[in-house]
Amino acid sequence: MSQQERKQNHMKFGLAICAWTMNAGVDDNELFFTAINQINKGGSDILSDPAQKVTLAALNLKAGSRAMAFSDFHSAFKLFKHGISFLSDDHWETHYNLSLDLFDSISEVACFVDDRDSVTIYTEQLIAHAKCYDDKLNGLYAATKALKNAERKQESLDSTLEILRQLGEPGLRPFQELTGDMDAIDGILQNTLDESIYNM
Image (cartoon, rainbow, N blue to C red; front, side, top):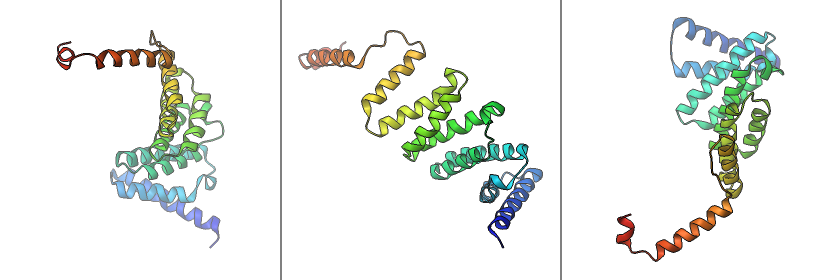
């Protein structure tokens, strides 16, 4: 059996199991994940129908979200990645909401598995194609979290403050000024009796 035939069989079995669970109204996680894993072993290049590919991208989003609910972040990452592989080249124009959900999800889970390169790759695409600032927020949060995880605390803080500025939070000041104020408050507290602090 050739590699192509093997992939076709994986896809065929996966679609059959998936169709059976849906038609029978069976909500069995084990069967659902088995179906999606078989489909993903087949791969997007086996299919020619664009509508079918979109359906399988959405099913991978559903499977990845379930995996995250079970705290299986590595599986969730793979499922979201497979979901993206089923999208067409013009997916941001033709299936914006599905694309946004997949890229939001994979950016978030990439932080959990500490894959900083993937955080960068997927958040950059998300931010580049988002239609409004609100749609960028999850990606910006993931990028900021990745900076924090990489011990790049100043960059993470600067990014957080910039996000808050974009959201219209008033009176935000540079970190250096805040540090000076915190040092001054610390000096005052060092010379203040505990009882006085408790009564504030």
